[in-house]
Amino acid sequence: MSETSILTEKAVVGRRVEFAYYSNLQSDSKTVWHPGIITAIEPGLTDVMLACIRLDGERRSGLRTPTDYEGLRYLDQVVPVPDLPMGRFTPTADDFGGDWEGVPVLQCESEDIVILTDDQRSAAVALHAFCKDMGIDRDYLPKMQARWAVFEWEPEDADIPWTVSWDAAETDDHALHIYYLPA
Picture 1 (cartoon, rainbow, N blue to C red):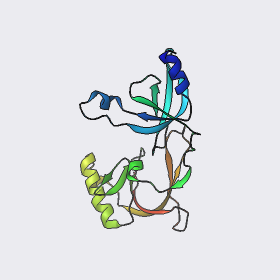
Picture 2 (picture 1 turned 45 degrees about the vertical axis):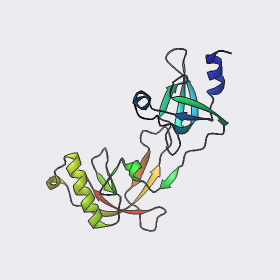
Picture 3 (picture 1 turned 90 degrees about the vertical axis):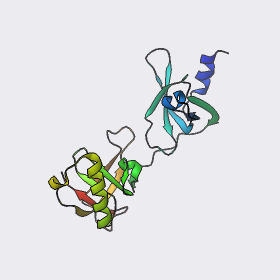
Picture 4 (picture 1 turned 120 degrees about the horizontal axis):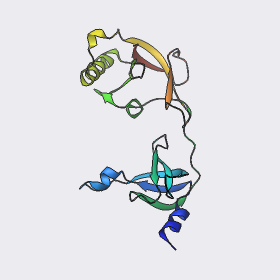
């Protein structure tokens, strides 16, 4: 049996895999293998098929790789692809892209700044560190506003992974007290 036909049999939706990034494969450090699952198989530019992979703990199937990629290990287990979480959620520093002084901070495309804490002092310290790192002049920013917000996941194929509602009330399901600086 040829390697191509073996890959065709192994590259199926629901196959558990381990994935290593190319940069890690080429480095002198030990290869780090990330567990995941194949969510789709798509045609590639040539005869090579592409596997769409969602890594465990990630929400999107953002990885597309040739089925014969050296950084893709096929495991024996084939399972139904789990649904993505939908609805309201509590964001983390990973969802925001990082934290400053231990507090998640995000500058939206609209240039609004969201600080994920209910403590005003922590918000001010995080904002200061964020502005310093991003080269933002604090003198031109509006005053921080305390708000209640609700974050909600969007479908996997949406342009953005989640949205936020600024008109939330403290009693709303998953409402979070945050600090906000409008653009």
